Figure 1 (cartoon, one colour):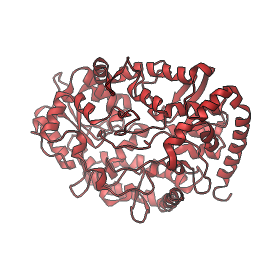
Figure 2 (cartoon, one colour):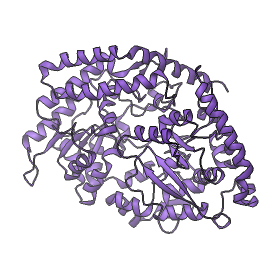
Figure 3 (cartoon, helix red, strand yellow):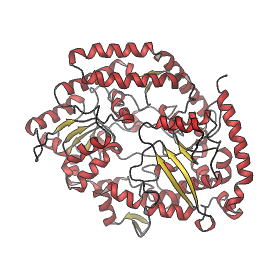
Figure 4 (spheres, helix red, strand yellow):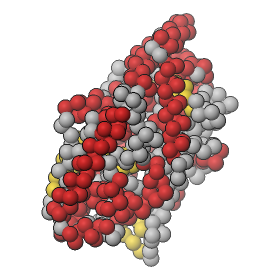
Amino acid sequence: MKPGGKKTVASSMAALTLAATLAGCSGNNGSSTAENTAEGSSPSGSSLKPITLTYFSEDSSTNWNNMKDEVGKVIAEKTGVTLDAEFAVGDPVQKISLIAATGEYPDLIAAKADVGKLVDAGAVIDLTDLIDKYAPNIKKMLGDKLVRTKYSLDDPSIYAIPTWSAVEEKKIKADGGFELQHRVVKEAGYPPIRTVKDFEKVIQDYITKHPTDENGNKNIGFSLNADDWHMYQVTNSGFQTTGGPDDGEYYIDQQTHQATYHFRRPEEKEYFRWLNHMNDIGLLDPESFVQKTDQFKAKVASGRVLGLADPEWDYGDGQNALKAAGKFDQTYGHYPVTLSEEYKDTSFWPAGFDGGYGISISSKCKDPVRAIQFLDFLASEEGQILNNWGIEGKHYTVENGKRTMIPAVQERANKDGAAFQKESGLGLYWNLMVHYGDGIKDSTGNYFTRNYPELLTANYSEPEKEALKAYKAEHWKDLFPKEEEFPPRAYGAAYTMSIPSDDPAVILGAKMKDITWKRVPEAVMAKPEDFDKIWDAYMADLEKAGVQEMEEAYTKHIQNRIKLWSAN
């Protein structure tokens, strides 16, 4: 079949499905609701009959409470929609493949970069007409960015409402880089933490003096979470410490837009050699490649893990446990660590609006109009404020036009984050909605999100304030290279591209992943004298498996995305 053939078939199927939907389903909602929604107002709970929509997400949601949380109840009341949700356990790619193969499609599906599998199977519909007729908030927010939601040059359908990337954002909060406990850098006298050697030294000095905690348990210098898909957090450090932005498994040349499987860069070999060195001198947790996520988080919660190289969303539950126990000196600061000073940490290298990862409506959705209206309410200013701030009078107040969290509520959020989120629902629905990011103000002049400078400062613990003051910084972001130091990425973030499942980049990519996830742990945990031999064998395995063909295929997709986005 010619390139794009499967997508064309899927698009045609989706068009037929949508035509039937608009003819037969809109009447279920009542004409007044459809008209009101088309004019830009959110659907009213009082005029919509309750409906349950099934939903599967590749992302996990450990605090999901079946919309019984305080925010979820309001969303259900406002929209009439309740989600019967399932979140990925284990390998989410396998689950999406199973959904595509069996034909048992939930009403809503968040398949991230794997939406191509669903497109090929005819499992999701083109949302273009639904957005135009029933989603005024989404349509208004996206504006001229709507072109970035189109699937491909060959198939310009919209198969997913983009929910992962903020439409606009001025990122304020650092939540990546390398992390060190505040007590560790304090004992070291707050030295510069700029390279992996700086990071290593403060850990080594501390653990030499304090090999065990107050209970006699062995302190852990540096732990990794490589459980299943979390392995990406381990391997991503290869490009992050050597000047590459987050483009998934590829390093993209910013001038030629040529894609290279990032592990093939010689500088990354030296980063993994450093991990091997950390293992050799006993600073790397020997269980890093065998522990489960719950075990990793439990170690963080114990306060024994001195250093991390992990995004905050991954270790946050463990850190929240430390906060709840009042062990703030054992929580973490963020540092722009790279292999050497010739490289810049790229945590704040902006990708712009990606239009990639998001939520699709399946071809078997029981009511696509209600589904799009639900997503449109979440995208409304009311929906975004509800998700980020909660309920006025219960979670926040407005005085003299300024929205402020109720102090007791903020204290609970700081000290008991996971339990509080499960109960309140604050921040739980962000990746279900088209949304603005940090630093963007709503129509009242207040910030959409609670990550803004004044509130971040107010919520810092005393050990955190002390560390920031020592580094002459107001926020952790101040330690990192600024957004304007990096060139724009014409393709956004490469990892958000949806590629057909029969494409060489996908088929060969699965082979490369299997090889990499075997060889990287082997190389890191080997004796130092064996590292080069194992790494050379790894490179040979990649070439034998067709890595160059994969890179050529991916390069074409990058260049096609640039053409698509520049079409308007």
